[in-house]
Image (cartoon, rainbow, N blue to C red):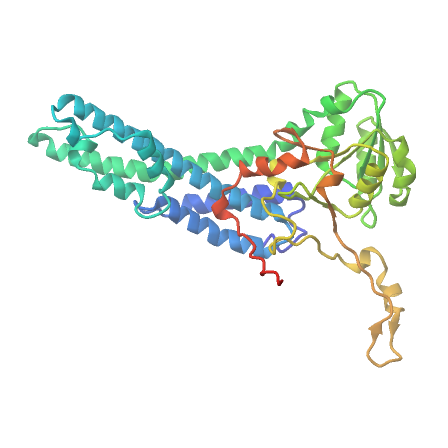
Length: 406
């Protein structure tokens, strides 16, 4: 599987896009029954989503997209339900105008429509409700000679409703894929509002979002300087510094250990993120917590750029969240040097030197000044409300904490 082979999919954006495309294919190929259509799609997406998440649990963007698609299915089903029930109410009202006895054909109230909409994913389904409604309330009265055409019309209407949900869901997933593909441009458009003339910007490592953000400010005739911490041990900052110079930006490359010494000369820290948690905390490349602490000490704004596909509805203490993974020790130490540190005298060949190479840092929300997403700038305290717009509560697994002893 591609997700297990990290050499084939690099970065949260590519992972999110391919996850959405795969789920779109699953939905397109899924055979949907006439009843409980939404439940059938949800079960299919969940089954595939669990496999994708298990393949690479550290890449939280996979779970984010799976939950986003589940939310889309629920929202589209709710929309169709509300429209169908509203249409049913209008049909009943039309019959009442032609019938002297209005009590036999009551118009559905807004409360009844809402109650039916909320229960679409629980038995009985909307289709069951519609089938249980008498024909006199569901469709206008026709003569007996039109019975055959009426039956064909109802059959065609059932087939149309069956195809409608899948069509709407696929269209919404297409919009999600488009939003993922264009999130860099949406974030970069806001650069001119945050970067001003003659400022000094500090960043660490390499991030395409940060690159496009800085270059967008440069294109708006902003003159500023960028300090790039190299981001050991992978030294991704070298690549970013080279790209910034190619784009015509004044760039200074510094070591990670020099961040605190240089932070007093900086006006703003702008960094990317691996994931943004529901509490406003950030899972980011290793070293960024050190940068955030230095920025807090010198009252320098710490700004995080993140596309909406990186907004995770889980909290850091959630059992599904893996805050870190250890990379190969070879990035820090050559294998020949490492083998020289083995203790062969004890007979167990246990190493005297241990190499730990974590991938990520966790930056708590109190160290973040502002989040800039493709929907605008937000304070850390607002993130949970923004995340609530993208996910359904039914798709979040709530951690059950053991009771505390007295």
